[in-house]
Image (cartoon, rainbow, N blue to C red):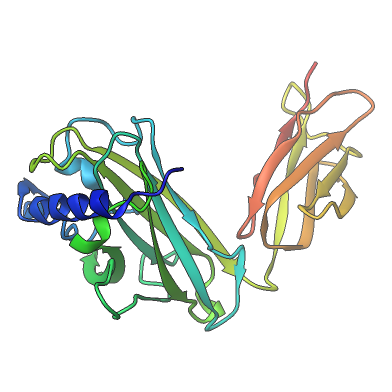
Length: 287
């Protein structure tokens, strides 16, 4: 992509600062008045569980209906206690003038998981805020007024740090929303996107199981179930008299494939992510 020259960048900075002065008012899920501004949204608009998203104020388009996207990069598949990693959120929208985002990281209970950190040097493009959701304090990282200007046409990225919690917190889910805005000093005509990512404790293992049945729903004994990991390593197991199977000690991770073979029936393969114990990865035979 072409880089924005200094004159264009200066114009965009002026536009974004002017846009930061404009806001629209709506109601959150508790009836409180909220504002949407280029200087950063109010907390709790990442589309995480029990949260809304920025379409509450930017109402022209439904969520994820534009030609752009928001993406999360740098979240590790597994984490160690206290591990410090660099995360980048990128919002794209080809016809946008300024851009924004908000992100949070929570555990399975909905509470804050780990800690975000942003640069405090010069004119920071990201900032931290806290919000209360159903009694749990969540931390948010989001854009500032200085952080709305793209460095390439149609794209804006923000980079910050995340320190992982203790591994006993289990799976950590990351939720992000992005805004590709036209900077017309209103909330109309702006596109809102959302995405998620997750990380599980390193070296954690889980059980994966389920039942293999005939087309009529009866348990199928002596079927061969194979699990194939993302590295290509595999294991096989035979179903019992009632068609049940279980793989113990499966390492956490995405992109597992399960296949079933039988002399009498065909089975469709399944793709799963292992981030907890799974007991319902079931298969039904095809005629």
